[in-house]
Length: 361
Ligand SMILES: Cc1ncc(C[n+]2csc(CCOP(=O)(O)OP(=O)(O)O)c2C)c(N)n1
Ligand SMILES: [Mg+2]
Image (cartoon, rainbow, N blue to C red):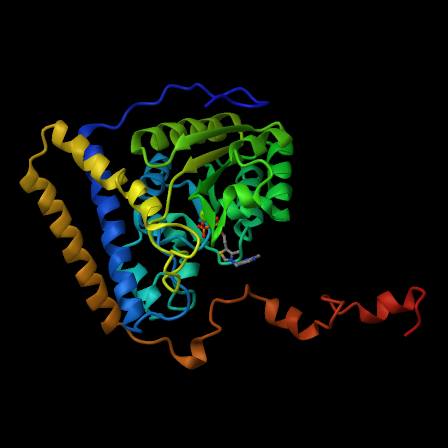
C-alpha cells in the first residue's frame, strides 16, 4: 500500500526460492501442530497460567522472522509460540517452558507469555499489552549507540496501538532514526473488541504518519507479501536507520486465549470464512504447483507431528524448577541492594533528601 509522510523504501528484494518456501511451510506447520497440541495439554492441566494461540497467523509470523538476519533482534507480545519456533528455539524448549520446567527457554520462570531466547536474538515474550514497545525501542537505541548494524522487529497486536507506550516509542524511534520495524499484527480483535470499535483510525498503518514515519499494510495471510514487505523495511532500517510500521492483516482461528471459546463476539461463519483462506493451505498449494509431490507434503506434516510429540515427552521428563532457585535470573546484579533501599515514592532511598527540600520530615 502507499506510504504516508515518508517515502517507501524501494530496495530490491528477492522472492522466495522453492526450497525456502518448503522450509517456511515446515515452520508454519510446526507452529500450527505445536499450538494445537499446546491447547490439548492445557486442557489436560499440564500447562498452567495463560496460553494464547496464533493459529491462522502463521504466514505473518514466519514471513517476518524469515526476513530477519540471524543477529537481528525480535521482541513480541504474548502470542508468541510461533515467533520463538521460527526464530530457532527448539520445540522442546518452548514446550518445556509452557510446562513450567527447568529446561524451558526461560527455565520455567516465564511460561507461555514470557518466552525468552537471547542466544537466538529473541528478547521475549511480554504479557503487558504494549509493554514490549519501550523495551524494543531501547534495544534499537542500544544498537545505534554500540555502532551495530542490526535491526529490531517489535511485534504488537491491534489492541496495543491505543496505549501510551505506542506513541512514546514511535515518537522516539522517528526522532532518533532508530533501526526498528513495528509489526502490528491486526487479527481483527483485541480480546473480544473489534478494531473499528477501539481505534479512531482503524487503518492502523496510517498511525505512522503522525510521526512522519513510513507505514504500510500487507495481507498477513500471504507469505510472499509479508516476507517482501518485512525484508524491504528491515533492509531500510539496517542500512538507512529508517524506522517503519508494518501492519499485517490476519485472523486468529482460536479464542483470545485457550480459556476463551472465541464465539461470544464473532460468528462461526466469520471464522469459517477466514479458514477458507488458511495460509497453510495456500502455501501447500503453491508447493504443489511448484512440483512438490503429495507424499513429500504429507511427510512434512508427519514430521511436525513427530517433533511436537517429542517436545511433549521432553517437557514431561524435564525437572520442575527448585523453589530456592525461583528468583534466579530475575534481577540484574546489584539490584537486590537497590530494592532493599526502596521506599514508596523514593526508589533510590532519597526520602530524607526530598522531604528536607521544603516539606519537612
Ligand atoms: C496493560 C494491559 N492491559 C490489559 C491487559 C489485558 N489484555 C491482555 S490481551 C489484551 C488484548 C490485546 O489485544 P491485541 O493487542 O489485539 O493482541 P492479540 O491478543 O489480538 O494478539 C488485553 C486487553 C494486559 N495484558 N495489559
Ligand atoms: Mg488483536
